[in-house]
Amino acid sequence: SFYMSLQDFYLEKMIAWREHLTGYYSVSPYYWSKLLTQLPSTIIGPFVKLLICYYMIGLNPSFSTYLLSATYLSIAAACGVSMGIFTGTLVDDFQ
Image (cartoon, rainbow, N blue to C red):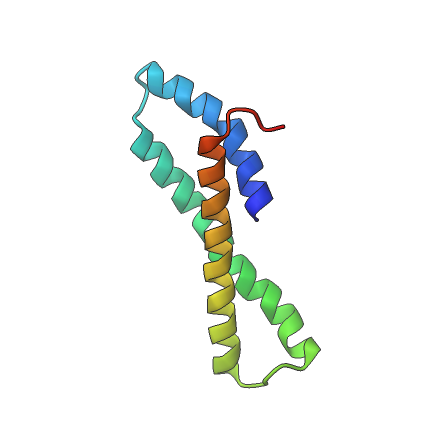
């Protein structure tokens, strides 16, 4: 998720900056819209992916343990997306 968010943000950064400079909108609406659109896939994605493999691997069959593991995985995915966006703001050339 780090690489995908880095690549997506890098491509969108130029357009968002140009629109900010022309006065269409400030940076905060772009940031909040980016955050809110990526939030469902960042949170729901790890729950679904872990559900597929959690019981197949034979981990602890308790559902509460699955929920705790999926929560940790969602937090790790959110950190990866955040690091991708942060790195995208620092880098001017994607290559």
